[in-house]
Length: 113
Image (cartoon, rainbow, N blue to C red; front, side, top):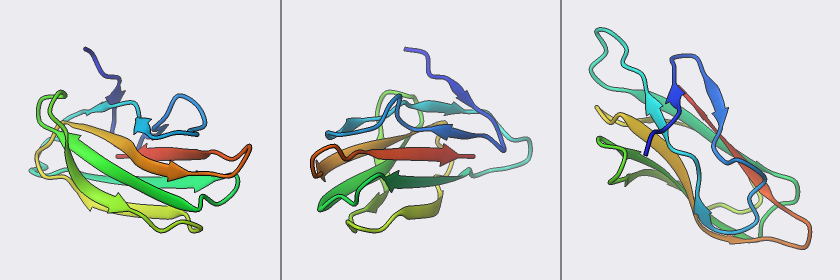
C-alpha cells in the first residue's frame, strides 16, 4: 500500500474527515532530509465539543506496515500540540485508541514535519 508523502514544512490532516469513533488515520511517508539522522514531527488534535474520554497515539514505522507508539495523549477537554522525535522511522500516523463524545461532536488531527 502506498502512503502519501510528507515533506519538510508540511502540515496535513491526519484523518480524511471528522473523527467520531476510534480508528487509524492516514499514514504518511516522510521524505528524507539530507544530513539529518533522526526525524521530528509535530502533531495536534482539536475538537468541536470536548470529548469526555480520549486516547490518541502518534505511531511511527520503518516499513509502513508495522507501527509502534511514540507518543500518547489522554487528557479530555484540552487540545494537544506536541513535538516528538521518532528516530529513523520513515512513516507516521495518528491512531485514536478510544473516544467518548457527546452527540454531534467530533475531533480532527494534524501531523507536521
